[in-house]
Image 1 (tube, rainbow, N blue to C red):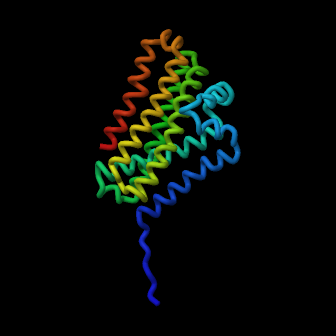
Image 2: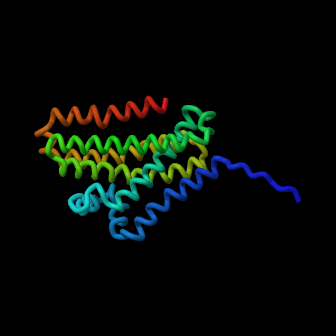
Image 3: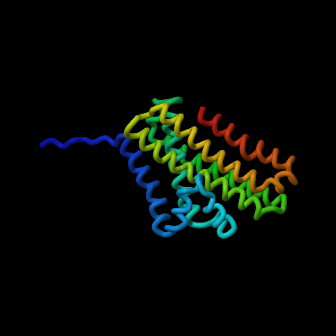
Length: 217
């Protein structure tokens, strides 16, 4: 009986990545069951935002675990976009995903730290903390959409551009809902610092996206 050499296909590491990412919401659900249920209905009911914005805010274990889940699936989704649209040959490089993962992690971390630093500058750390918590909460929820899309892109409609487009639309819709909620809740604060808010949008919201898009190209 001859031994069979089994190559480590891309689907293998994608499966492992998806399973590892899934561990984080499962652990979060087992430890914070009520909080998880409130989180799941976030786009349809802002009870989660109302209950937890004032309590633990940005730095808590539930938020951390859902952020890790989101970062992993955002990175994997970017990988599928890269493979489908940009450079399918280079996507076979085993170092591409770790590099993308490090890039997404550093991008989100640096952006969050810069926003918190803004809070210190304007003596509004608590307000910025709440604002960032709300935005990241909706971003983390969008991670669920990307997780489902990643499953379809890996096993069902492999590298389907239609799936990518639908997932992107849903991703942006969820985050737009988050932005509308933030703008509505902080109208007075924004009107007081309107000029600085415009600078904030350009420097910390729009510019990082342009940089990330340039990096992917």
